Length: 179
Image (cartoon, rainbow, N blue to C red; front, side, top):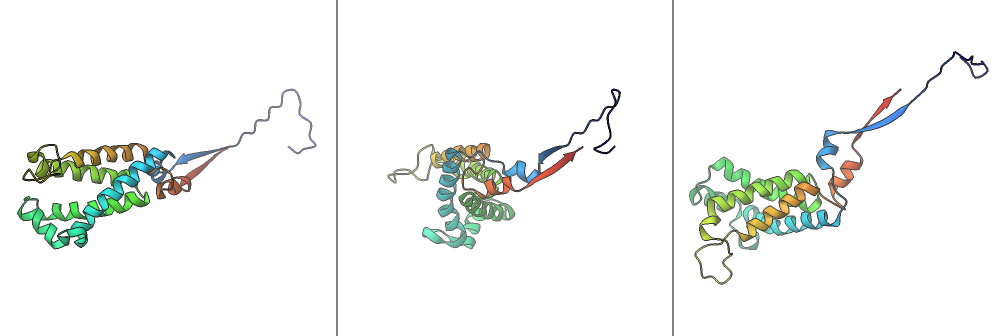
C-alpha cells in the first residue's frame, strides 16, 4: 500500500515499533546507586583494607611480605597453602577494585569472607576490642565487624558515583527491537 492509496472502512493498518533495553549480565552485576553513601562506603573500605593487603603482599607498613605472610598463615594459623594464597590475593585485588569501583559487589563479598575468616581463625579468642593499650595478648574483632558492615553496604548499593561500575553499567546494554 502506498501513501496515495485510500483506505476503506474495513481496512486496518497497525504499525508499532518499540525499542527495549534488556540489561546484560555485566550491567546487572555492576548496576549501582548513584548515591554518595555508596561511594563513601566503597572508598572507605578499600582505603582501609589496602594498607593491610599491602603489608601481606609487599611488606609495606611493617608487614611480612608475601612469603612471610604465607608462612604465617600456613604454620601459625594452620590455613592450607592454597587457601592462604587465595586469601592474600583476594584481599589485595579486592581492596584495589574497591578503590577504583570495579566489580564492587564481587570485591565486597571477597572482603566480607576474609573478615569472617579472620574472626573465626584468629580474632574471636581475643574478644571484641582492639588492643589499643597493649594490655591483651592479641587483637579483637571490632575492626573486622566494621569491614563486614561496609562490605554489606558496598554489596547492596554497588560502587556509587565515580566508579568504574557506573561507567560499565551505562555502556553495556543490549538493544531489542520489537516490530
